[in-house]
Image (tube, rainbow, N blue to C red; front, side, top):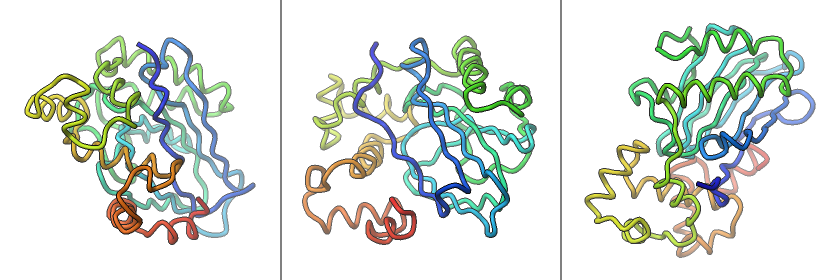
Length: 251
């Protein structure tokens, strides 16, 4: 299986940019590239004068999140079809792993869609990994994060997914649930069961989120019938019109 070439989720919205806050991404090693989109780090370089607001966008990905200011705090996170704004305060340091849609096979009841502020109490060794990450540079973290992913794969929490990889590699050919079913050679009923099991999304909602993600890098008329349709879909998911979002988050 090849790494899905056509799906790269956009960076979420930040209320503060520039020298005060650093965001970095790194591609995984080749043996993990069918499962992981990126490793990432988000941190303040000094205490901010005001609280930092992070506008997280739905992308159908699951993240392992590590709070390196307090390594006990960690979690498995994902959004469904609505963006959310998280107040991270004036000083923070996070790192994580972003999995491609459909590759996370862990317990979906453990996934949270809100601010993670308490010690992790699940079955994954996230607190131990957080302790190993604390104090490392981002370049040094990548080896530890890769080891965490390999552990997840060995223990059945993550694995390559041929079905969602095919979807991600053919997004331009999918405009409807029927298109997705034809692409995969499944009936509509089979598609519904399969996509729900693999991603937690209905096919319709998965298409809606993928199309919105594409709109950040494509002209909206390539993806939507007209500007009114695009603006309605954008506001429904993001919570702002496209113009409001660009002005507020500098996207």
